[in-house]
Amino acid sequence: MTALAADRARYDRATAHLDAPVAIVDLDAFDANADDLLRRAGGKPVRVASKSVRCRALLERVLARDGFQGIMSFTLAESLWLARSGFDDILLAYPSADRAGFAELGADPKLAGAVTVLVDDPAQLDLIDASRAGGREVVRVCLELDTSLRLLGGRVRVGARRSPLRSPAQLAELARSVVRRPGFRLVGIMAYEGHIAGVGDAVAGRPLRSRAVRLMQAAARRELAERRAAVVRAVRAVAPGLEFVNGGGTGSVQHTAAEDAVTEIAAGSGLYVPRLFDNYTSFTGRPAALFALPVVRRPGVGVVTVLGGGYPASGAAGPDRLPVPYLPRGLAYDPQEGPGEVQTPLLGSPADDLLIGDKVWFRHAKAGELCERFDALHLVEGDSVTATVPTYRGEGHTFL
Image (cartoon, rainbow, N blue to C red; front, side, top):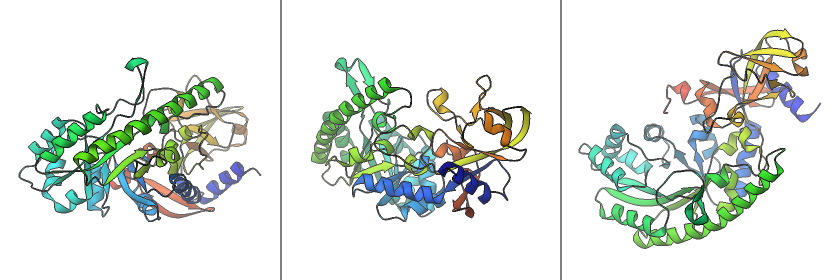
């Protein structure tokens, strides 16, 4: 029996008492992936990206390990909820226009001490001030650096369109605005290099593209390391008490950790290892988060139909945003139908060995987005479910 066949047998035994659709996290794989992130971080603390986990119990599990420190959140409402739940080091990694949330933050010393908000524009500071509703708590602030690679004199841009702040002078100017403004304290800098951390450099069957990605990423790492160091020097000249400089992402942990200017690494998807993280030369993870759909029809030879399955991931639409049939190996979508809202036909010789009620296991394209589809995650150790824990959705929260 192959390792994958053994995994399928384990998952089927562990969930035999559960009707599909069902989602699991293999804790052996989850913990091994956490160990790998720490190894690649080389002693620098890893801040966990909550959007890639979306389950409080698993956030608690990974943060209980030495080497993991703090949460990188994705909305202000989520940040406040996590702080009220006992998490005490939360970096909101995206600007917010949640006026009610800022009023709550500015009025509660516990929340204000636990949550750091992100800004890249003085207008965001104006919005926070206008939202205070009399609250006098000091708001902790982090600035975001644009990490994109600019080529041909800026005519070509590689990287996400995030912060407008690119140069040391721009970051220092906004830092002075924060420092001069009552009610705010500048504590950090964040820079997410998605074109390095989130783009696979070893795409199966695409050797030329893979080589081009590796060349781009090598150039981007060199340029960003030099610019980030200059930015940190410029901002520290304005705010000597800067507490952290955050960078990275699952695909670039070891490269970002090697920069002296960076004090902590962000990562999250590397805990679940969804399908988009299969194509990297720098690391190999173990798929930890899976979902199963039940076989409900057998339309003909080499075909089964499962219930549900239309769970696309965010990003530019394309085949790489779709979940993939994982176990048993050898199943594929019907190219005329793909994964459906209510049912999904699957083609391949393994279909003939599947019976009505059997489970087909899938991997989502991205990490935490799977949890928007399921109320609970069943935690598997060996061939048993040892706990069932709610996702954010299961606790009644869909923050976006």
